[in-house]
Length: 256
Image: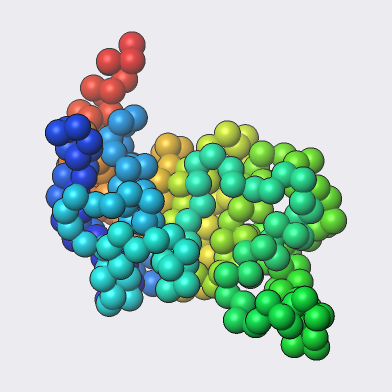
């Protein structure tokens, strides 16, 4: 059963269909990648799924609930979290503080308890720090916990952003180009991290241009071109699909 279902999603800008009638699903523990040439509509699709854009058509179903156009913070409360192509990290805060920030959305204590520093508030803070340190260990950043985030390498910042998203205990994790700007070693680290998260039962929806990474870790691939879904399937079948080959070759010829 799908944990996330995309049903006929579409949107237009100025009369131009940026995404048109796209449907697919993601099961628990599954890695589904959305690929396509530049301008295919991948990020626009992500923005609709994650509540940044209001779809013109279709539905987003999360764990059986229609969450179409629900705001990102409400989606996060329901178990859908997203990272961004452009880093959304607090550069002047420590790595640990950045990760702890991910726990705040889950907190149910009162503001008064925090102001008065009541035992309940201290317990929540202690639990958040313990959880954050465990997440940093999982992503390989435990030794950098007290460093300013701005001092980290680009690949480490990508892993930090994933750790902060995982602090929300997501059922579905949307990753927007998690390996962009990373070198080969950093990409391999991201690769292992994504696979580990999926193995824990989290459904992962991925947009990524690194085709080696996509083919290596994906269970299922959805291919977009000019806002339309032109193919989907396992990595082997998608890589041999004539429509996919034509779309990528066409993009390369245009660039040339």
